[in-house]
Length: 295
Image 1 (cartoon, helix red, strand yellow):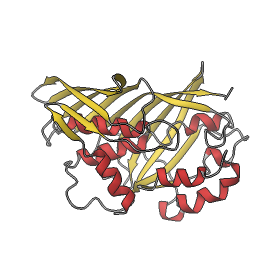
Image 2: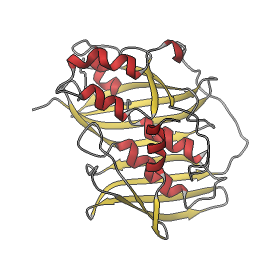
Image 3: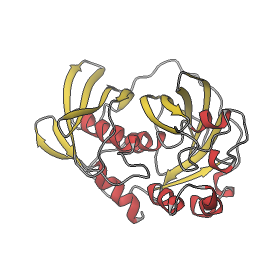
Image 4: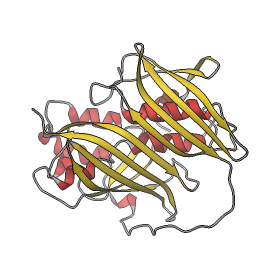
């Protein structure tokens, strides 16, 4: 486990300040606001702290309301909506500077046996044959706006080994491509020891954190845009939904298969499927974001 992963786990280990009220710290992101995956993962940790460990999340639905201030802590208040025989529902409100910046509703479910089917995993190269971020990002440093962007991207993803199956949007800016992107990812090291968050909740929260990193890439590809690092779009996540179908481990390779079925009205939609290396469909993700040309 590297220092960046330890730092991320510390970020997810929230301080309890009152019953059902937690405080999380923030850290600088590559853009001047709190990374959306961070606030979503922290909110899910807060909700999970009020639910029995044997009842992991099966879905979440969230709205990003205001940009978060990376220099200030975030307070998460959990509302215990329902505790049923099989399902538990929680609502979480994240507040900074007296304003709500994020809402999340999560549902938790005890394991049951039942009918089962899934879509097949697409054929992709082995992740170990693909370049790491440290190998890839410096190649495109001359395309980024401003100095130090490549290094900031590396630092932002230092806790996660994330490898693109094909070239990312910033590598082919100006070239319209199929609105589909795929990445392999896993944490930079094994999740050994006791971080204070039970598994599988920890694995699900880490996957929630990563799920916001690349999902809107497919929107950019459809229009030949390279993204904020290239300076040809501005944008932000609006809402985020996830369904957790099968067990996964965040420290083992996971394939994130992403596509965009539509963009309109200054908004773009991204859909994702996360598979284990063995081909099991573990997570489905949908996100809409603001995607605009800079003024």
